[in-house]
Length: 420
Image 1 (cartoon, one colour):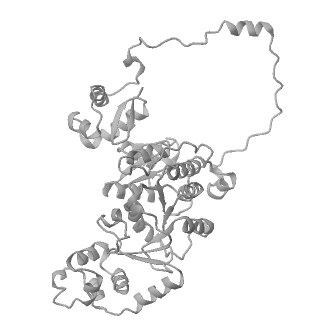
Image 2 (cartoon, rainbow, N blue to C red):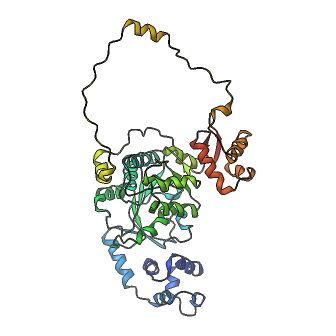
Image 3 (cartoon, rainbow, N blue to C red):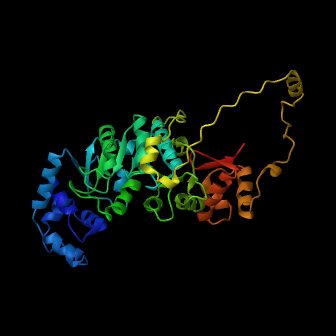
């Protein structure tokens, strides 16, 4: 019964991995609830707090949560339900119960991309977050975010403007709005997708809840996009969890002189994939979701409005307004000027016979080794790792640097090619 799942979810001292051990041993939460002391013998190593909590068979708290869910129109999804997302179910520590408001998208049938970033994003970061959120949704992806202010908020606004479903993963109850300034965003996300959490109704936004919810943000997704993140950031925690869960990590390259980009730029050095558009990301999953992905480049109009920047960017980080200047009167062109222009060469000198090596930026020894293999026709990243004699953990980082230098380009299906 549903009440037994909630009972198991609120046992203290267990942790998510402890709950999963119980579910792997018993056939469900109801069997855990009715297990006697002898049946619990294999779990004697559990902490005294966990064992005492499992011996407490009172269902009062679980029944109260069920009642609150009914009153707040909150749906309850258990780990054993068919609708529970498979990607999330397969991580090491999935929540045994999820609460959500709205309509849960078909997570397993669609490419899901989580977008994370700093709450103190620059004006550039806010604009890019909104633009990429729109582009991802327009290309067929379900956008997931933590609904925090800054980059998360802007990514969700962009995705919602594309008219596609979204998922907001909360560090509080589904009936609690945090930050309160996002009240309208919560309403729109619920109407167009859902607000999802592992925390029962009424749970306040306690600081320790947010690192926990990050594993859900990454666990739901095929890949995680980091837009802008300082060296100490919750976005970096999500990126690490994504890598541990076997998800791709994508990063928007940032200004090396801006502190809020230092953490995300470091991810590029460690092998994350550099991207500049939503299609760069979604195209990686084209072969997994045939017919569900579409290329849409009509996103250049997406930007952060002045009021959005005013709400989120600290005053010292905002660009100074341009001073109004008197418009210049166009200078009249003489016949002599026109005659001189006719003598200009309107066709650049051909570079067809220039050696290709002269056009490439300087490459170190390992980069040259990778480039040589690609020129021989080796295009799969896995094959490059096997044949290059470069440690596999460094190959992705080298490919990222080659991409930044304009030497190679990424292709769908984890392939690369020389840039034309």
